[in-house]
Image (tube, rainbow, N blue to C red):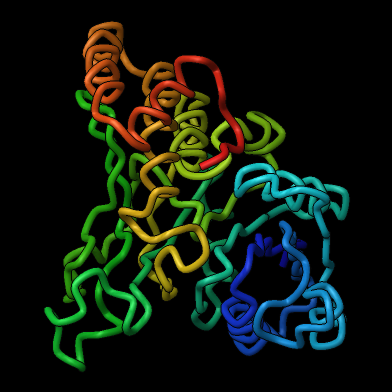
Length: 309
């Protein structure tokens, strides 16, 4: 197998990161060509695991085989992944898997993604089928106990170009095989995204101006614009503790970055007609108040990257 790296961005929630790493080493322990890289955004001092140690120290004690990179500032999801990707490139990795720290991987997930990517030279990025982890569904009372762990979080991505919204296919549906076919999709998700080295060589890294949210959608569009494929691959799965470190849907942080970055993304890629509609929509958001006003104003003033919320 070609040399590969798994990159995890850590920001708070030490328990999630440790559980994610444990699932990786249980399910990929036989593969000696996989290098795991953890990129830590501050704060550094552990909140729940050994309060007197930095999380970097804890990781090195528990997983000495992991490369740990500590950033001086909170660079956000996009740039932290860029730092990890650059380290993987320095190590001459041919395949790079970006993985949220609040996920649990299944057996041979990386191996099977790489096997498919190698079968088609046009593959640029890929994401597998992703379930909500048990107890992390949006609508917890909707499902029977036997259905939990099989509720879909991502089964491909859909971009509504007329209104500039990105959404997941299949979200909240119990999986009964309705999204079982490998296919091209509008975007891969940064929650679990395989990127080939040739893709990075061709189109570069993530746009760090997003900081958080929409950077994966942006990257997927760039892949397609360079005549490569974005693939949804449901033959392997993982489980996601949705937004456990980046803010729950509806939180001030979530609304801010989703709204500001939607505008940034739309004005980069949408048609002229849609940009006109987006402009008028942004004026509506300017007078809506609160975080909507701030995020819209920040976009129009060019205040991208990390925000004070």
